[in-house]
Length: 281
Image 1 (cartoon, one colour):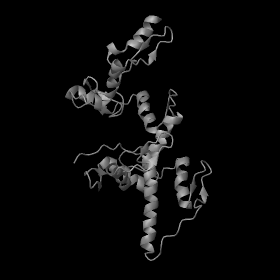
Image 2 (spheres, one colour; image 1 turned 90 degrees about the horizontal axis):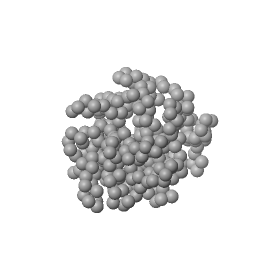
Image 3 (cartoon, one colour; image 1 turned 60 degrees about the horizontal axis):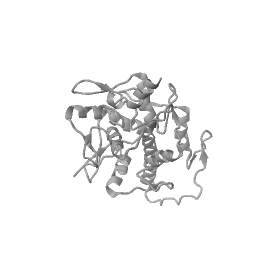
Image 4 (spheres, helix red, strand yellow; image 1 turned 180 degrees about the vertical axis):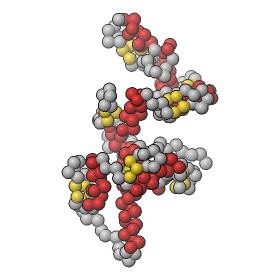
């Protein structure tokens, strides 16, 4: 059976999953200690402990204490492999699996494996079709509340994550982290064929996965109008404008419009917009 693609959870999603796992583990321990005790009926207003920094509420003081580490930057545990600091033992356990490659939780439907149980639970919604988090503005539904939060920023235009080097803002923390590699000159992903390096493995722009298609000849993005194929979706989008006549890039000096703007991954012949601007100076 084919393996449905599920994007890896962002750091924010992983933190939420870990907190949920900790709460579940605590509930399980209490059940083991008191097997005859029935679960308490939750109170209507169960948040009795509130963070003085962000006003987030918690039902127990120990959850508030763990949450405060986010603001205080407390890092009680360190990874022995990469020296990364983790907030608690569960975070360290999950992180260590990124080094060992251990994925002890398999999906019964497709066989894909995951590093922790809650990532598996999110993935299983791909098979069940469950998308419990709906956008009230456009009706789209999502697998997790974190995905919905990121989506809502496309409506509000909110970009809360800012690059301290150039000031560029992003709607997601992971996008900011990828961007920061440009300033640091990091290119950790190397092509095994020609040894060319890239700052990201696979995303939306020209990266290692897109570059590999220059060696394999793979062109998975096909125009539905003329059936011409491309090795990345941005070249397909630009090509589609030759059919629709769309020219979204306009010169502020003469008003002339173009169907394509220059990007680092596009061919020189396609940089017509910036060529036009340079000739107008």
